[in-house]
Amino acid sequence: MTPLDAAFEHLLRDLAPQVLGAIIRRFRDFGDAEDAVQEALLAAAIQWPRDGVPDNPRAWLIQVASRRMTDHLRSEMARRRRETAASAELENLAPAADIEIEPDQDDALVLLFMCCHPALTPSSAIALTLRAVGGLTTAEIANAFMVPEATMAQRISRAKQSIKASGVPFSLPTTSGNQEQTQRLRAVLHVLYLIFNEGYTSSAGPHLQRTELSTEAIRLTRTVHKLLPDDGEVAGLLALMLLTDARRAARTGPDGELIPLTKQDRALWDSKSIAEGVALLTTALSKGSIGPYQLQAAIAAVHDEAPRADETDWPQILALYDLLKRMSDNPMVMLNHTIAVAMVHGPSAGLERLKDLDADGRLAGHHRVDAVRAHLLELAGDQPGAIAHYQIAAARTTSLPERNYLITQAARLRENAG
Amino acid sequence: MKYILMMNCPKTGYDTFGSMPKDDIKAHIAFMHSFNKALRESGELVSAEGLADPKQAKLVRAGKDGEPITDGVFPEAKEYLAGYWIIEVDNPEQAYKIAARASTAPGPGGAPSNMPIEVRQVMSSAPTEWL
Image (cartoon, rainbow over all chains, first blue to last red; front, side):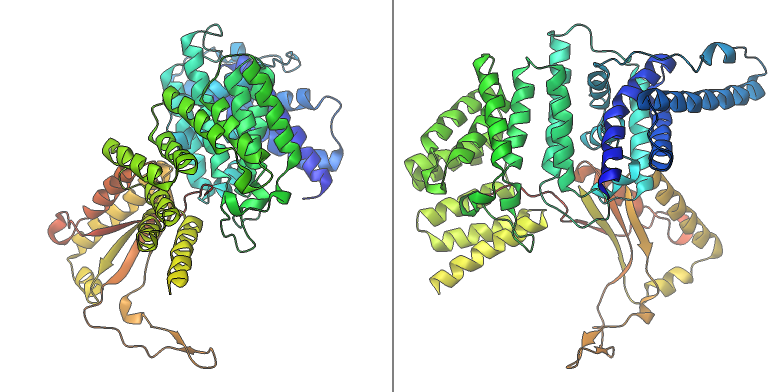
């Protein structure tokens, strides 16, 4: 992609939610509006590099999308008229194409609430968010998730049908600060977090690479933060993403192999992202209402601020996990808490804690439990036990790079022993 | 999460299938057609292929010079892959449900064949950071 293409793409993708918001407010129908805006974005991607960017790109896109909507409604009406031989609705539905609607900054937020609708499965919410708010094409999203474009198109179209069937209007869920909005915002943040996590490693592909999903998640979370600057958890999530993404370059080796946190070359960490994440987090924490994302960001910050792995402030991490454990009943938090216990009080204390997790049962058969057990057994000097559990973990993971990492750990221990 | 659903058969499986009455064959083909169409429309289909008769199958090894040697001998009891679907779903239960639907493909007399479908997860999950 040339720098010029990239500039066009940024402009288009920033405008996408604004244009979509304007079209929905004018025509009401989210699903059809979303299709019309996609068509307008594609038209712009072809015409602007050739003819130049129009004076008011947003108005241009709104006009093209409106025209598509009007054409669509006309043919719908004609079809219905043929079928029912009675309709005079058309003229009321076709608006004057020259009305410029003022941009509404809340549109991106409303759209996120729609796309992360509780009626949708996570995979549908992710796809719809990336298209309607992120302004990505169906082909790009399909490519990122390595499924055919037709499959992704169906997933998006079904997601839109579900939203339509739910009858949720295009507006913010009542006034801010109430319980419904808090819950819906939590769903939005969760979807953004899932998108971020999908982008962990790179994978071959001609267009959108999987790592770009992390970048996209950060961009969307930034938008939410701009609209809700006083929300500590939004700031916390953005900080968590920045503080985690800062380690990206150090996290995989030349052959795509995973490099654990303790072995990473910290010179490769992105100090700018770390500084931004820490600043965001500091401001959020000073406002007082602490939540799980802020705590996870705080833990990421402790790791990022250690000049060397063995200088990591584990007692502070343990204290943060204590808080997090009290706040959320999540077995993955229990598992991470166990690691912190082991790092502060020794591997046998950690192994003792793993028994609680076994009794809890929710992570039964999860490869991460076996991997943590293997790691703690290794630290405790039980090499055969560690080898066995690395192998069990390897047999249970569904990530190829993780499997390769785990069997390599087992092989390393076997060779040390031999 | 992605799964592969594999339909296996013995070496004679294609002959057995091909010797069914015409209407039974038609019913089977119609079933597969609508099954694939439904998977495409539900946004779950990643890919699906049927494989050619195993009588054409070759076992290939590299020779000393790296050239292919194709005179491999198959063990008698071998099961052959007849076709597969790769699907993307939200949970394993959904994959099992789809596999069970594939298993009802009609066999002789138009009754559900209840053929076994081997379900395996594709290693496509995003990894996480290790300590």
